[in-house]
Length: 237
Image (cartoon, rainbow, N blue to C red; front, top):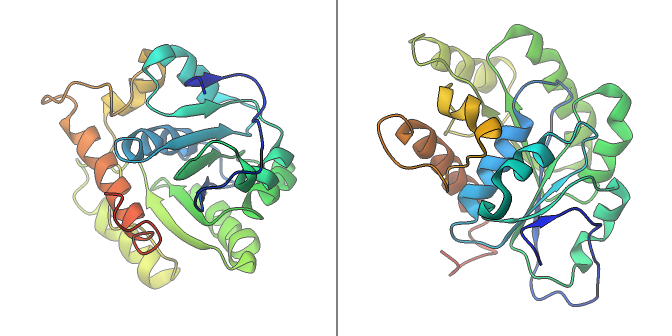
């Protein structure tokens, strides 16, 4: 399968092991779903076979993938009909993880519901801004929890120049709202902001003083997430 696929996903009957379908979801736009999908997919691709799927009509991952061209470290399927996702487990090609970038609007709720109906796990990106809280909690309480899906909030764009920001938002998640979260988090770096336009991922960046923070953050998120699947994927690391 080519690294960049514009055609629809091909389904078949051969499944060699259970894929883990990871939805990256939040009905609040602008919290970094595309960044998390692409960078986490790249981190996981270091040790696993990964497919990234885009069902968001904004197609942000498609633009990013096109800028990477032949440097994509995972297989990519953009501009997909979400109904195809209901048969992902019948894919003839063998993947360990399928990451799905989902839309961030109320009007696209049916698309998100289709993805969540087949997902094993949900990553919920959250930026440290008050206006992101209500949509995030609504996504969790109305769409994720009723499906009994494992999920974790991933704090994104943490500003290291604000010493109390991380502690404050971790405490809010743990105590005030009582929702699960990643111990790892993503800090705000220009490297991360520029990555889509420059066609960069953690797997293509040179590790230096400018990029080391971005690479370390994404790598920690990848390790933490795969630890949650360790029992079903033992021996693959």
